[in-house]
Amino acid sequence: MRLFSRLVALSLMLGLCACTTAGPPPGTPEFAAAQVSRAYDCGLRVDRSRVVRRMPQEERRRFAMANAAYAVKSYKAPRACGAAERASVQRDVAALARR
Image 1 (spheres, rainbow, N blue to C red):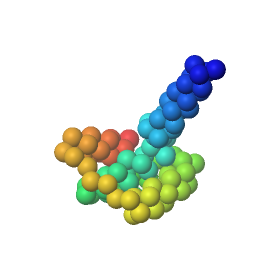
Image 2 (tube, one colour; image 1 turned 45 degrees about the vertical axis):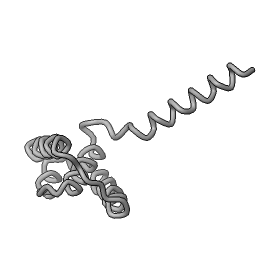
Image 3 (cartoon, rainbow, N blue to C red; image 1 turned 90 degrees about the horizontal axis):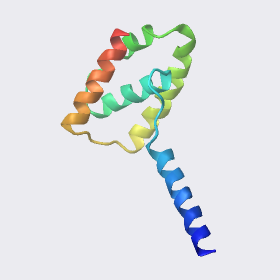
Image 4 (cartoon, rainbow, N blue to C red; image 1 turned 180 degrees about the vertical axis):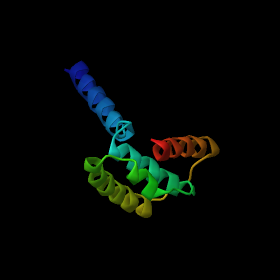
């Protein structure tokens, strides 16, 4: 019985870790919104309208909804970013603007 309860606790813990670390998959409007929001957190300039213009019409609404949700989260709990993360986010946002 004790082994069973440990296995249940372990699987629950692993499941919760996956939920908190997994973000939206790359290539989706939600991923683009997350990267734009993170860029703002890092103090980077973002041409949001350029990113939106490059998206297909049907994805723009999803981007706007996700971007609004990330903006609220960012406002409530802003995070600083290190140089490596800043460079990574800058590359991702530049790729979104060229897409």
